Length: 293
Image (tube, rainbow, N blue to C red; front, side, top):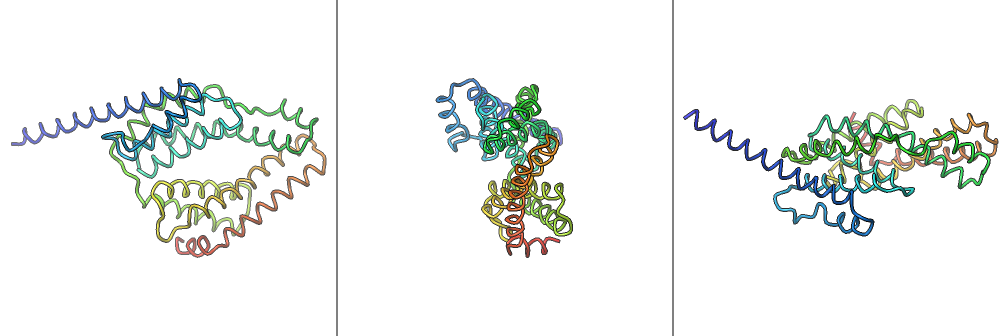
């Protein structure tokens, strides 16, 4: 009798491995097709990746395959928004894996890729700001000093993760509302610290926590007692503008920029910080953050 049970268990495990292998191959084919296609074909393929018609593939796998394809698409582009789109897809992949509580090692690897592209993202932001400010001499100096392209190994490292991510998504996990609640508890803690000290680091960490909660809520839908996606998006935007000006002000000082330019960056930072404070005072965040304490 015991041998029969073990035999059935072995058969189930073999079946599960085969299903995971099939899911991986389908996902890898979809990602490869998007990676190798031309612009028009890519758009059509991206519309198809992750449709409910993918028989036998759960929502988790469909969404993961769609995000992998989007990241691969962005990695092959050279336009101004390519790095931004690549980073958004990676962050959403991390949120998806975290909300399903799978792929711990893959989440860590994705975080490493995001950190590796931070400097390039900041450089692109600074160069765009200086171009809008029409400061040609300073813009020329910044172009010599900053590196707006991500490190060469980032995209190959991402492609090497495809298989592991797809296998993690095939492990049978599901997106849980509890993941959104735990993300809100983290945001509540960050907001409490902000009330004590508004350091650049504390503001940035609150922004990251708001973004993480927003992505998880977009996956699971509204959760009673948690703030709306719209409120979180506004808070994330305001705190992001504060962070961008903090980064910019450091380099403006290093480049000995004209006082008027520094004053402009400081005024923009102050305006964004005031907007962030107003959003943090909204009942949806203030009262619920106290309850989460």
